Structure formats: C-alpha cells, structure tokens
Image (cartoon, rainbow, N blue to C red; front, side, top):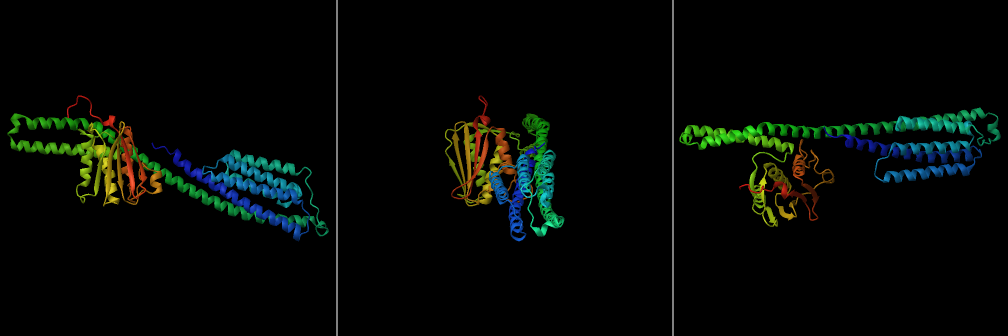
Length: 434
C-alpha cells in the first residue's frame, strides 16, 4: 500500500499556518479596537484610565504579532503547541488590561469567552482545556484587588446602566468576531479537506502502480518459464531433419513461434508498465552498440541531423541488454523529440563504474512542479489523463539496477535528463558467449 502519512501531513501543516495567520489578523483587529476604545473612553466619556499599563499591553500584542509573522516566515508547519502559546499570551494580555480597568466589573471581561471558543476550534482537546483553565485562572485573579475605574459624576448615579451599555457593545463585538472567525475557519477546513481528498486520490493512484507491479511480477513468474520452454521446443522442431522437409508443418511451426513471441512481447509490456527492470529475452551486446541502436531507432522517421549523438564513453563494455531498460531510455528520447522536433542531443560518457547518458532538448523545459516532483507517477506536462509514467518508469528501472536519474533545465533553453547506470549491473557474465 502507498504511504499516505506524508501526503496527509502537508494539508495539516498548511491548515496550521492558515490558523496562525487568522490569529495574527484577529490580533491586529484587537490592537486597533483597544486603541479606539481607549480613545473613546478617555476623550468622549471622560473616564480616566491608566494609560501606561494599557498601552504596554497593546505594545505586547504588536510584539507577539511580529514574532508570529517571523514564525510563519520559517516556511515550516505551525504546531499545536505554538498556537496554544499564542492564545495563552492573548489571555494573559486581556487579563492584564482588565486588571487595570476595573477587573470583573469591566463589561469587556466577557471577551474571555472569545478566547475559549477560538481554542476549542483550533486546538487539540487537551490544549482547549488548557485555554479554559487559563481563563478561569485569569477570572479568579481579576477578583483580587483590581484597579477600580473612577467614573465621572454623570455616570456615578447609574453605574448599572453604563455596565449594560458596555455589555451590549461587548456582545456585538464578540458576535461579529465569532461570525467572521468561524466563517474563515470553515473555509480553511473545507480547503484542508479538499487537499486531503486530493492527496488520498494521489496515494490511491500510486498504490495502483504498486498493484500493477505485483501483477507484472506474478505474470512474469507464471508465464516466463513455459513461454521460454515452448520457444525452445518449437525451435528444435523446426530444425529437426524429419520435419524440415514438410513445408506445411514448417508454416504451422512458424505461426506457433510468432504467437509465442507475441505472448513474450505482451508479458514484457506488462512488466514495463510495472517498472520491472528485468523483462524477457535479454540480448548480449556491448554498451556502445546498445546506445547506438537506441539512437538509430530514434533517428528513424525523423529529419537527418535532428538527433545528435556524442559518444565519449571510452573503451567499450560487453553487457546484457534488457528490453525494459532500452524502452525507458527510448521513452525519454521520444518525449524530447515531442517537445523539440528540430534537435535532440544524446551524450554517452563514463564516470568510474557508472555509464552516464544525457539527453538534452530545446523545448520549453520542465516546470517548477515537475522539477520538484520528478520521478513521481502521473506528473506530466502533456495534460493527458494517466500520463506522466515515462519518467516514473525510468527512475524505477534505474533504481532496481542501483542507478538513478535527474532532470534540470538548460541555461541555453530546453531540458536535460541525466541517467546514471551502473555498468556492473548489466555487464555480461565472464565466460558467457556473445
């Protein structure tokens, strides 16, 4: 089965960053609202407030927001602990402001409910209860000798009316912020669910590739041996002296041999779809002949000079050529020819035990997404359903042989695919006849 832990982690990490961004935005609103409230209470209502501790709390919120922006700038996931710490700071700052502005008699003490609701939505259950405990602790502390508000004479006659007016303003503020907050959170959750669904779909598609590989391996084991036996027997019968003179029987044997070879080709195709590195009917050849044949096949049907082969491999090496390896390299050449029909450059060189094959083109190059997700299935620039298996099969085949592949965009335009193939993995065993 495909591992979905990484694919599901990415949407969760994105949700954490979005939630922190939302807290930052709410905190900026709180800074603006607190400054406006201080101005209205002092300027219009004529109520004296201790400006130093209240403005210090506003400054603390600004510092926390700047630090939170730096946290987002790291580019990594925002954890539940970091979100909890940010909310605990908000609770502490609100408690500090209320302590210096009347304590529990201040109608804005109900704002603690907003912190509890935010914690219940954003945090894990344990962290949510931590926020509840912090708010209860803050309420208990506020009941111990808070700084009283000195009301002007016009408010002293009816302090309850002033409290009710403040409670109404606080209710409206909480309602507006909760609607805005919950709406944003709901959108974040929908986006996260959509990302998770896409990630699971991608994991299911990759799991389908794994099942194809299992099917191909089973087909190879079940069909490879009997097909090879039939091929040998048919060859013996065709060379048998008693049957060689029977033209009608020779035609039947030829048809039988063609049918067996067709079955072998089908099995090889299934193996190729699974990325198997060892198909049927390997061929004894040399590295230079192997690469030359691939290049000549690519040149067939194209204008002369469009496929340039630069051979700096050095001393030739006897190898066992596998059809799967030949096909995946041919697929890379076909892809290059599709985007760059006027020129393809193939360079063969050697780096120690590694054969290095570079295929360059003058096409549009790889997108950033292709470069980032190179080698993953269904990553294609052609936009066809089910496309994007060519490079995946290339990487898979080379990985089974102990090699690898990489892609890059050329400075002069176009793309380059670099193939590293261990010579020892395909070298012809000593003593085996060509």
